[in-house]
Amino acid sequence: MGFDSRSKSQKVTLATDPAAARAAAIALLARRDYASGELRLRLRRKGFGAEIVESTIAELAEERALDDARYAANYVSYAAARGHGPLRIAAELKALELPGDLIEAALAGGPDWRVLAATVRNRKFSPEPPADWPEKARQARFLQYRGFSSDHIRLALGADFDLD
Image 1 (cartoon, rainbow, N blue to C red):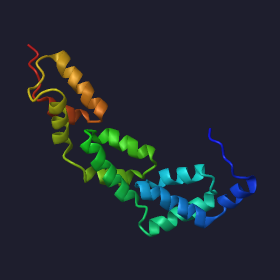
Image 2 (image 1 turned 180 degrees about the vertical axis):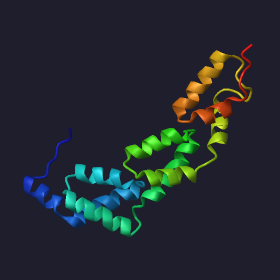
Image 3 (image 1 turned 135 degrees about the vertical axis):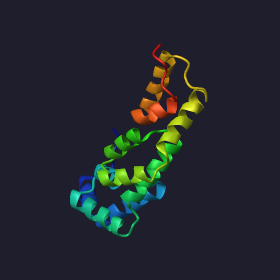
Image 4 (image 1 turned 90 degrees about the horizontal axis):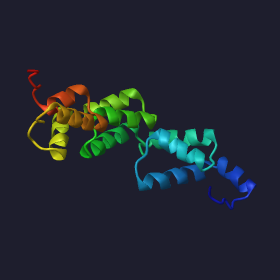
């Protein structure tokens, strides 16, 4: 909890001042890109009214200073470079209140997830396939935690073992 030295009248003025809301949004966007839902939450936490926040976000979206599709594509690129899979990335983008169609489009424009899963596995373990079932299960859990689907994991781990 921080100490807020603004008086009550200053807070009321701030909540209804569109220029102050725009300035705050631009200041936030100058540091990094935001999804509209994330920016909406930050502006509301700063004390701006709901109507002012919505109009500010609409203006910024119209000016293309705020673009959810661009944010999703950049986020997919960033997270994939860190070795995260499509399931984890989709969950993180959904938590940022992005629409499902934008998430799907951004993931479709991402890397080849099968190749990325194999690369992540090779970087963490080794290029050789796992020697036994416990090691295969351990590597599969690692890839699952990273957000890869069972198909990606199966392809990254190589051929199935003989049951004999």
